[in-house]
Length: 241
Image 1 (cartoon, rainbow, N blue to C red):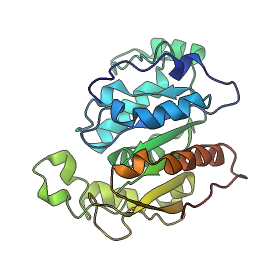
Image 2 (image 1 turned 180 degrees about the horizontal axis):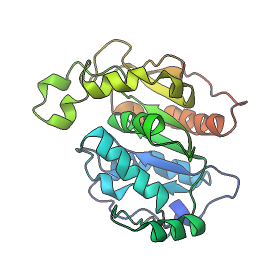
Image 3 (image 1 turned 180 degrees about the vertical axis):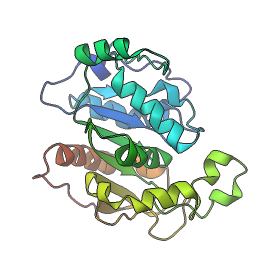
């Protein structure tokens, strides 16, 4: 993830007009390059694929990270994957960019903490409905049993009972916009059924490992099917066994 700093040109240069835009949301301590194998596969199917440089290693708190994503969506400049990310930009500049480079009906593809950021966005920042839904992989929607053991504030907010986790659990209405894909055993979450989300499309896969699940080829295919399902609700992704 440190080797890949600039998104490949094909992320925005080789897209198909009928394909949904996808925004990549990595997990805690993950730069966007950690999800590059999955993002590459999404891009090669014709989806405009966006990253959020402002997330960095994704160690900021969830509300702040969600606002960073919001800035990307409002100010996206689709040239070589580079984006304006200055939240001090004036209303006129934002409006001009909105008219010229509008992102609408996009889908988040998230891993781990990225899924919590994505759900926070859907619950609190999506009044204009620019995001259609989210595919979350190995996201601890109910919190992680390990979160209290790591001496970092941004990881501890992933603990069960934390204010952010409780807030997100209260917003059940957005769950129908989420596909939650999770491994049969998650060594970083441990909490039973932490990735299961009431009202969402929950899919447990026969893979073990919080990170390994992200690189499984069958899971990557399921992510593609889930993107299509969120773009066209009449289609349903298959459950892997």
